[in-house]
Length: 308
Image: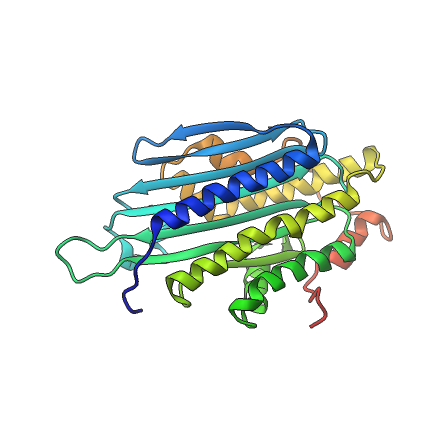
């Protein structure tokens, strides 16, 4: 890859602004304000964790911004990039997970991030950098129109940067958010990308901005449609059971969680994605033909939601 100028300040400013815009949009829907918790990391950098708990619409919603630095990459990064070992590095990103109160609203995750391993002084090395991120949807009671809307918004955000990106990123998402030990997907997917730099810095950054900017229009219309649907203890119980899958994935497979913990990140901020109420049951199966069974038969499947 030819040497290219990267603009860390532009990425930093965009990510901070994105966090603020998402928090403001969610507060309008929920009616309750986020707690803003700024923190510093002894090894370098810091961030702001915005958390809403016990809201009217969201039982727990976290939007975190972090900008961390270090002199030695943690194993989660050097496995994929052994050539970056021994370099100083910077990573910054916005990551969010929203756990709604109403089981008919899906849980959502979104992350956009930038990473650079800097060239060492007095060497002919180049900076190693990439963008990563995406968003995915995890319903408890699925609605096809919600799945189509979410995927269509993702596709439209990526379209200006290449028609091949959406199908490629959708496939990566399906493969990544898969619970291998359960042999089931976490949800209905979305888009996921990592190590992305093939368009050069400016266009790769523009693509990442398009993904981040699409989040509100991808998710909040679904929230508006579902937030006033009536539900009872049965639906809440199933929601808590399915949230267990979310915890399993985040603690066993999620690269961001592993990177954060291995790089001595702030634990409270790393684990803001955890749902507040979760249940596990031994070898539980939904009743055949039930609304709960429909999640498995109609939504937790390999499907092209746009019919392409």
